[in-house]
Amino acid sequence: MCGIVGYVGPREVVPLLIAGLRRLEYRGYDSAGVAVVCDGALETRRAEGKLDRLVERLAEQPVSGSYGVAHTRWATHGKPTERNAHPVVDSKNRIAIIHNGIIENFLAIKRRLMGEGWTFATDTDTEVIANLVSSYYTGDLAAAVKRAVGELEGMYACALIGTGGTDADGHAIEEIVAVRQGTPLVLGLGKGESFLASDPAALIAHTRDVIFLDNGDIARLTRSQIEIWDRSGAAVQRPVTRLNWDPQQVEKGGYKHFMLKEIHEQPQAARDTFGGRVDFETGKIGFDALELAPDYVRSLSRIQLLACGTSWHAAHIGKFLIEEMARIPVEVDYASEYRYRDPIVDASVLVAGISQSGETIDTVWAMEAAKERGARLIALSNVPGSQATRISSGTLYTHAGPEIGVASTKAFTTQLVAFYLLALYLRQQLGREVELELLAPLAHLPQAISEA
Image 1 (tube, rainbow, N blue to C red):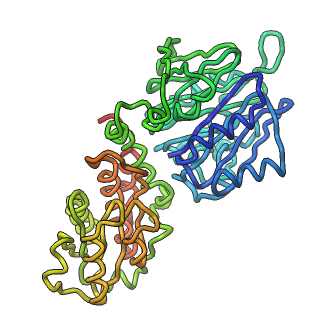
Image 2: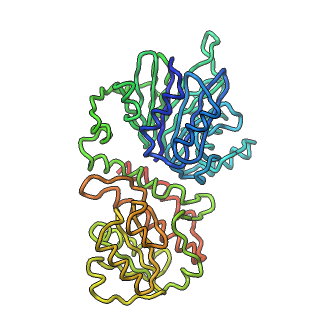
Image 3: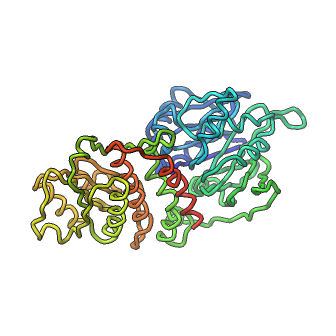
């Protein structure tokens, strides 16, 4: 998931944007950045890592303005580097965009734009949107965005600022254009100012009057008004919601209870689990905290999955996926019974412990029993630094985020996504091609879950 913040109004924009990102910092740790228009020119500041790195960069290279956008990123396309950080600028340096989501058909559009002479400086699908919008931009940013989004397929929320637009009196236009398709985007109404964010928590310090965009909506924000068009291009009025939230309600994101919130977080959580691990152009799968060499994978006699409860059910689906994709035999064991039966396991067996918390004691004990017999351990977990991850030689993190509701929702869903990734990775390490047809449904998954 990524954090989006935008502002247009009389206040100095950068401190306001940074304060908004602070509330959304949990949504992305890879990089952060801001873009503002200063004296008619785009100015961007970006930094790899957590938000404090961006704050340091801004102290070294200050920038100011009255409108702009900011972003904290969890990578999907492209490695988590400063080069791929948002905001992303088009190759003519007149449009800056921040983006949360996945453009499923980015590659086809990218190839077409490259044929038309557009250049690309990042590995992101976001830059495709920037250049596509710029290719239609003649001073009316909203019109260019409307035309561009008609060609995009996927699930996304974007906010764009541009230079070159003027009003009827010839004055430079201060505006943000936003579009929502599947991924949440909320607008904030102030007196002589407008706000936007991916989560109302970023706006509550400035306004309690908000508008939640519908799927397909395009919005134009200025100091004096907010205009909204639906996917057909017709002007629409969306209801203004008055937020009367206490801090706990802010934490719940406006939902009645945590379980409902977490049900609706499943599209984002699924995307976060495969984000940055799949190269949709080359079909390559990679993990930061898990490395299984091809020779080792070829030496495996079988894989054992150890889990309890919800994770045990996920493991059974994982068995089907791995056996189908990689053709390696898989056994699923209930972790609480595993160590009592003197299991037959040795160095030719890869053992994976599955635990949302990484602290399920029966699973940890079962993993230790397998390790004592010479098996190689990996963990599939949501919590870095947990016990299961510490005793393992590698971990496949699910990136579900905190799951407070008792009945599992997004933790289970992300375990299934992780197993799909693992199955494809093992297939790859065995020298078999990971066809793009196997990856395309993955890119579409968040939108499919959202629609369901």
